[in-house]
Length: 311
Ligand SMILES: Nc1nc2c(ncn2[C@@H]2O[C@H](COP(=O)(O)OP(=O)(O)OP(=O)(O)O)[C@@H](O)[C@H]2O)c(=O)[nH]1
Ligand SMILES: [Mg+2]
Ligand SMILES: [Zn+2]
Image (cartoon, rainbow, N blue to C red):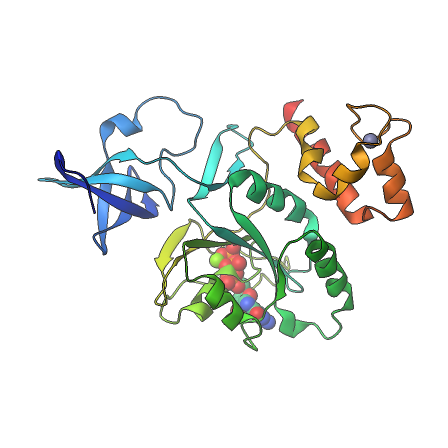
């Protein structure tokens, strides 16, 4: 697509994969290698990279090849904070939905990151959907149904899927026909396998869980975006080890726990952190079952995490 009539050489392109000082982009329906214009490489910035997978960029064909000249504003982003540099890393930009994968077994169910990922969706401007993967490995689902119910009550879509039995795969396909979808989660939960199942021929590399550690092996090392035959785009991402939210203050966290709101108005102190204050209506609600204790623990972990990062 030509962006404006005065600059006929500028095209809008979509970033599919990052390269050193450039990217593979989709322009006019074709994949092209493009380099970042020097100006975009210069200067310190708060992001680990000036462009991210999913970015819409202005690209021009020069005698030396395709050059990325500018980045269009992002309408949404899945991003996290790198602990070492405190920079924001955008895993995928302009996404419409992220499927957060949790495996029921191999590696074992670890819901620790879920509340944090749902906050990332809220702040990032996209829908967060939970997928409980490897459902074929589990005979008794009751424990996991209970977790699914917890999040469904909060308005989150939760599905059980299996690439072995095909459970839940067709339903996903219809959800992904429009816009950009992303799979994210810890290593080994089956992100790349799922994308290969959704689109045979994609050929994403997958690997078995390490026998020694019972964990994934971080097989996928960079995000990549792929066109779906039935419409829409989907992105694979590397396994998440830890996930810190950029620019989040401890005092803001409670606002992302929508079910706390109803009670928080009744706390004695208006600036109540719901941790140790007297006459905290949130703590009372947890004790009486009005707020699920798992969510309250999730809240405390996130607040403590933010405090640790800032200390
Ligand atoms: N039993 C069973 N195994 C699965 C399923 N989906 C994936 N696996 C297996 O899980 C292992 C890890 O799958 P990957 O797709 O490489 O996992 P990933 O999430 O992409 O991992 P990283 O790229 O390391 O982040 C592979 O051995 C897959 O065959 C499933 O539905 N059921
Ligand atoms: Mg992978
Ligand atoms: Zn309170």
